[in-house]
Length: 73
Image (cartoon, rainbow, N blue to C red; front, side, top):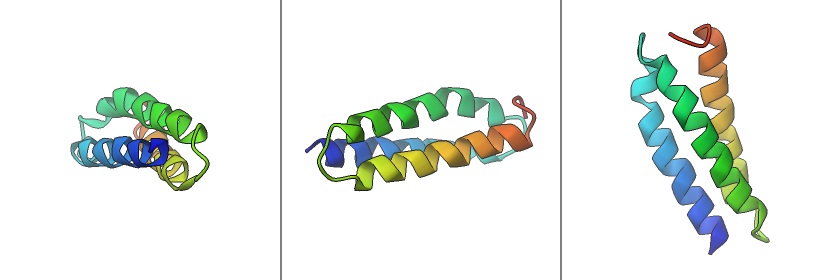
């Protein structure tokens, strides 16, 4: 059940990251990366690791976007 919740958190975060790809909306990732990491923490408590890995990939994508935009763009 926790794996499903983690995957759902990751999916919602990924959908919310779509507008953050556009210029001047990249600062939205400052809110979305911690949410994805929280989903990974929820997935850590599960015996299956699919949701956890998905949340970590989403968080890495958001962190990469922050890095490329200088933390603001």
